[in-house]
Structures are given as structure tokens and as C-alpha cells.
Image (cartoon, rainbow, N blue to C red; front, side):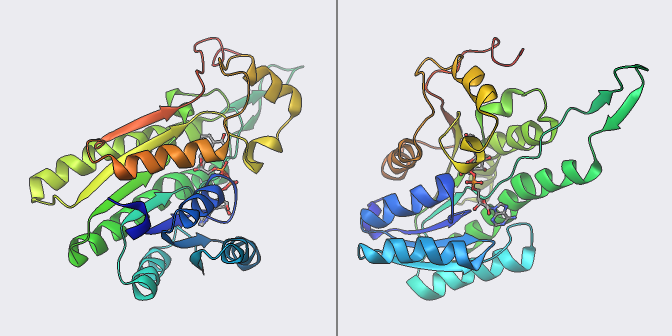
Length: 264
Ligand SMILES: NC(=O)c1ccc[n+]([C@@H]2O[C@H](COP(=O)([O-])OP(=O)(O)OC[C@H]3O[C@@H](n4cnc5c(N)ncnc54)[C@H](O)[C@@H]3O)[C@@H](O)[C@H]2O)c1
């Protein structure tokens, strides 16, 4: 696939990794649709990209809504005539241990709330499923060459305090294998699926966290710094042009050394 001939759809494209991916591919001449939850942040990124002459549209939408996924995929095809690469960066974290004890009594003081559980499962897992499903439908019916890119996380291995997030990201990491197996079964040959599992990356999700905790995390990273969002974007670019990459989830972590990090 030639990047400058592709139409990209990026969920969560109005901040962090998604914003960087949108900028990266627009600069390379691709047509780009970004989906986000808030019109003002979408407008900011759309204006940024238009300033350097990029071909971009912004669509407000929530990936957890079936009506919205169908709408933003249809809107992308209506604007650009096709759809080739879908990058699912929309996601959230909502951390906490499953149980927290009262220091004095040793009894359970707090449980991970159903809301914290469900929000992360909805955004990170269900939202990714709905986006991939509806994008694949459009690619099959349109007959376009396509690449589906679900975004997992290195924490798919099971991070303490992230039962919800790690469960969702582990499931997302499995999707490429299953989806491509199903495409084989159904004779769908025009779409590949490659997941990306980033390590700790310099985005608002991380730069806003407790800086001592961040320093401790970086002690476990061989690279010794956060990954830059452009490094994730260029990895996705490689997936676009290399047709041999398929049915797998690729880690890009800077060399995160477990189990030391996970045991903290
Ligand atoms: N930053 C990291 O270190 C890191 C590491 C591994 C994986 N990831 C994953 O990469 C992806 C992007 O993370 P980021 O760090 O750029 O975060 P971010 O918070 O900067 O961006 C996430 C974007 O997704 C949007 N979003 C969330 N829920 C949505 C919904 N229901 N519908 C539409 N948009 C929604 C948010 O509004 C935001 O714009 C996430 O899936 C995250 O889990 C991040």
C-alpha cells in the first residue's frame, strides 16, 4: 500500500498517539479522518493539519456507540471515496486495585467500582471491536485494500492496578489473529490486521501522572525515556507498506524489562 494514496481513519485522533498518527500520515500526503469526543479538540488538530496543507476532516463521535461508529465510517467514505487504514487509538485508563483494605481493621474498605471496570471495557475493548467491525465491513463492500490497527498496550501482560485496562488490552492484542483467521475462513483477502502494543509513551495519559511513579516506571525501560508518539506513528507506517505484516500484535516498548516493573 502506498501511504499517500491511502485514506486513514483514526479514532482518538484529537490527542496523544492518535493526534501524532494523524499529523504523521497527513504530512506524508494521506487523506485523514480523525474521530474524537469533543469538537473543540478535534478542531484544534484539524486546523493544525490544514495549516501545513494536509487533507483532513474531523468527526465528533463516541466509539462505544454502534450508531456513531457506522456514522463516522460512512462520513469518511463519503468525504474521501474509500477507506484503507483504521487506527483505533481511542481509549482510557481508570486505575485502582480490585480491593483496598482499611489499615486499622484489615477489612475491605473499597472495591474497584463497576463503573471504573465498565468504562474501560467499553472504551478500550468494545469501542475497538465496533470500529474494526464496521471498518472491515466498509472495506469488504468497497473492495479496497485495507489495514486494521487495534492499539493494545504492553500492559496486556497484566499490570497491577489495571485489572480493567490489562484485561481489555490483552483481548485487543488477540484480535488480529482471530480476525485474520476468520477472514481466511470467509475468503476475505483484501484486509490485513496488525495490532500495536506500545510501552510507556509521552502523551497526556502519562505526562499527567504522578512524576515519582513515572520515574520508577522508567527505571525498568532499557531506552531510559518515554517513547515518542512519532515513533509509534512510524511503526504504523511500516505496517502500512509491508504486506507481510499480518495477524499479529507488535510491541514497541523501548525494552521494558519484566518482571521487575510489574512486581512494584
Ligand atoms: N500513552 C501510553 O503510554 C500508552 C501505552 C500503551 C498504550 N496506549 C494506548 O494508546 C491509545 C492512545 O493513548 P494516548 O496515550 O494517546 O491517550 P490520550 O488520552 O492522549 O488519547 C486518547 C484519546 O481517545 C479519546 N477517546 C477516549 N474514549 C473515547 C471514546 N469512547 N470515543 C472516542 N474517543 C475516545 C480521548 O478523548 C483521547 O482523545 C490508548 O488506547 C492507550 O490505551 C497508550
